[in-house]
Structure formats: C-alpha cells, structure tokens
Amino acid sequence: MASGKTSKAARRNTPAPLKKNSFPWGTVTAVVVLVAMIAVIGTYVAVRSNEQQARAEALAPFTPTAQNPDPSRAIPGIVIKEYPGGSHVGPDEQVAYTESPPFGGTHDQVWAACNGVVYDTPVRSENLVHSLEHGAVWIAYHPDRVSGEALETLKSKVTVPYTVMSPYPDLDRPISLQSWGHQLKLDDANDPRIDQFIAALRLNPNTHPEPNASCQETTLFDQHNPPPYQPAPTPGTPGARAEDESVDPSRPMQTG
Amino acid sequence: MTTTEPGTAEEPGRAGPSRTQRLVMGGAVLLTVLLVGVIIGMLVRLPGQPPAPPAYDSVDVGFAQDMSIHHTQAVQMAAWERDHTTDPVLRLLATDIEDTQHGQVGRMLGWLELWGAPTMPLSGRYMTWMADAPGHDHREPGSSEPGVTQMPGMATAEELRRLRESTGPEMDVLWLQLMLRHHEGGAPMLAYAADHAQTPQVRNLAAQMLAAQTAESEYLRELLAQRGGTPLPL
Image (cartoon, rainbow over all chains, first blue to last red; front, side, top):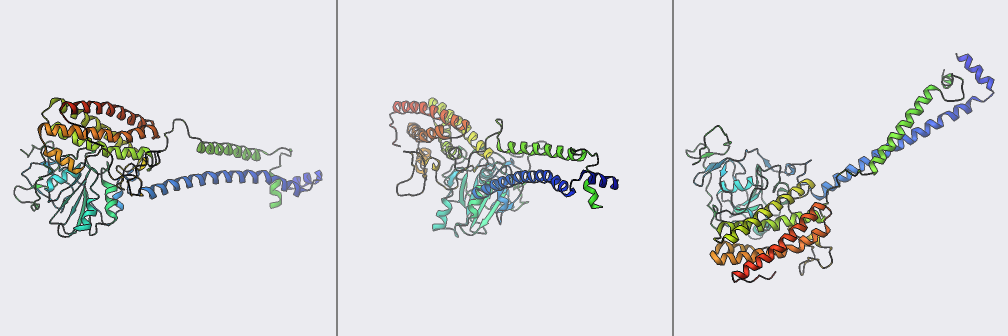
C-alpha cells in the first residue's frame, strides 16, 4: 500500500509538499468561519442575558417578577412565615397571636382601612392582620421610641394606597414592618430596607392571599375611631382563638 | 508513518476529493447553513412574537401606576357615597363609578404584573412620565425634580375627613364636588396616555376612560347644579 502510493507520487513528478500545503486551506477556512459564527452567537447570547440582568438589577431588584416572585428574601433580617388565609373571628374575640406585632393568621372579619391611613392611636391587631391579607404593608412603631423627624419620615411612606401605619406599644424595637407572612424589625426610620420591604411586598400578587381585595373604609370600621389595640392573650387562654386555625369545610363554623 | 497518512485520502487516485473529504465538506456546508439560519433568527423578530415589555420609565408603566392610585381614591369616595347617601340617583351613579374604576384598576395592576414592573411608584412623585411633553411639564414651582407629589383632582385627607363627617344633602353636594374635580383632574393624564403610550391596549383604555369621564363630568355638573352646588376649582 505504502509502496504503491510512493510510486504514484513519483510518477506524477509533482512535488508532494505542494499538494500537502494546498489541501488544508479549505478546511482551515471552513473551521475559522464556523468558529467565528459560533463565537458571534455565543457572544450575542451572553451579552443579551447580561444586559437583561443588569437592567433588572439596576432598576428594581426588589420588584416582584415571574422569575423572582418574592424579592424580600434578599432583605437582611426579614422573617418569613407561612400562614393560611381566610380564617375569621368576630369583633369581640381575640386571637392568641404568637408574633408581636402579628403578621398573619386568623383575623377579624372586617379589615382596617388601609388606603394610606396613618392612625394616631394603637389599633386592634385582628383588623390590621386582615389588611395584610389584602396586600397592605403595615408600619408599626413604638410610640415612645419614634418621634419628630423619624416619625415624619415614616409617615411620608404612607401616602399611597395599601399602606397603613399605627403605634404599637408592646413593640420590642422602634419600628416593625408587616406584610402577610413577612416581618422586618428596624431601629432607624432612614434604613433603606424600609423601601425595599415596601417595593417587594406591597400588593405583591405572589405573597398575599387576596389580590385586588379592598383597603377602603367600610361601614363596619370607623377610620376616625378605630377599635383599640389590646395585647394578645397567651395561646391556650380560655376563649382566645388560635392563630393558625385553618378553614376546614368539614368543621362547623365557630363564629356566631 | 506520518508521511504516508495524507496520501491515504487520495487512494482512489482521482483529482477530486475523497469520500471522507466530501463527507466533511458536506457536513461543514450543512453546519454553515444552520448557523447562518440561527444568526438570521437572532436578528429578525418574528411577527407573532410579543414585543418587549414597556420600560420602567415608560408612559405605559407610569400611567398604569399613577392612574391606579388616582382611580383608587375615586373608588374609595364612590363606595362611601354608595354606603351613606339616601339619594337613589347618586347611589346608582356611585355604584357605577366604583365598579367601573375598580375593574380598571385591576386591569392596570395586571399589566404591571405581566410587565414585571413595580405596582406603585416608590419615589412618592407622580406624573414623571409626562415630563417631556410641551405644556405638560408638571414640575412643582420651586422644585427641580420632575413630577408632582399630589396628582390634580385628588382630594386631600382633610377633604375626605369632611366627606365622612357630613351627612344628607351636604354630603351629597360635597361628594359631587370632589368627584367632579377628581374626573377633571385626571383628564390630562388620560389624554397624554391615550396619545403617547406604546401599548395599543393602554392607549385604548386611556381613551375610553377619557371619553366616559368627560361625559360623566357633564352629568356630575348637572346633578351638582340641581342640588344648588358649584364646582370646586382644580
């Protein structure tokens, strides 16, 4: 085999190196073109996804999207708990909330007016928890530890619907933000995490049980004379309703 | 050994390429055609493909955010009148305004969700999306920042308190005054969005709101005059 070939090459009188040199050029060109095209596609895809990511990151990292349904998870200090929605109590009942301020669970049938309402007096938690179920953010503050400029700063956040603010005398920190299933306690009214919390959770359709539910005042809740705050009874207190009552259709209704 | 290898491909002894070479060439041509197709596909947007969602600073997003807030107050005032008036004409009108505008808020919030945009402006300033329009520079006197802190036609907290504290014909007149001013104050925002939004559905809804509210404003004026009231200045 090898000998036959050598003889053929010799017979043709053509220098073998020339043929050897001419052969790879087509292949080399083809390979170069292919590699270039793959590089163009790769670069395009990489640049495009980078641009999209940069845009999302720069403009609103705390805006809920399909890819990032609960951006509040990135806020340092956030507490997240799962609560079922819908379980109600009457105006004379109390819920044995285990969180203070509460941020989910059984609540009053009537929600507290929450279309940008600043309450000057402490308001019944059972009503405010219902407002959280409708997508509102509740800013609670300790009345002795937040005043003056800090209080005005907090009030300035409550100019838009689905935001509500009230003093909470039993607060263990100056400020506490509540959204359904979410809480963030803070010391400083200028903390940037306040805006992050509001951006991530106010009306976030992925985190509250009743999208498009109302925040307006009703005939059953007087915005200018709201039912007053009472400390939550300890769980197990006779007559107190449990925080985690689920809506069980097989069980008879307990409320009158 | 190595010197004999290039020759192996030429074994058929013909001037044309070998079977292996043709296979390689054919594969390369096929691959090239495929890659050219991919590149064309990247550059050309198919007609059926949905357009990119409006940017956060677009008219569409700004309008949907601000008008949701504007509408929410109208819903709030209408619900109060529906619950408290004894006038059947006003109760029907209030119910109509409440239902209509509540549904429209739902549409606008749904769009914002689909666009991955914030539901409400965080800056506390409204109408920034109208800033570049001639004659529509809604800068407040003495402020260098674009936009306003209070949209035209919005009732103040004090006015809402007066509405809640009044009763009977006094409440009816105040409600008609506040609702008329609310409709008129929203009109420039509706007109701007009807002309400048990039999404056809947004332009359409804004134009429909404008037409309906303009007609309703006339009706509110009539009802107000019948009850001895005069319109509030904007």
